[in-house]
Image (cartoon, rainbow, N blue to C red):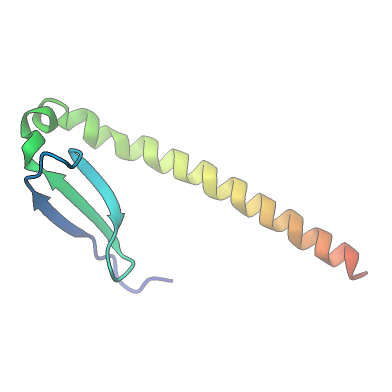
Amino acid sequence: MRENNNVEFRIINDSGMPPLVIAQNENDEPKVVLNTYHRIWISLNRRLIAGIIENLQEKMDTILTSYLMEQRQFEKEDLDDNGE
């Protein structure tokens, strides 16, 4: 379990990069890169971008629940195979 909730934010200006990137940094912590090259697009879509978070949480919950259900099924199969 993580002890801290550090999120690294970087601001760049690069025509070859997308407007917004969520990745992991060298310490395996979340990193958000905001590209000011696309500042007009980001500005026009600022509320939509902010609203993505709620949908992202729902999608992540769906993915994690599915993964945990799959892992639980594997665990039950292992228990059945071992006669427990």
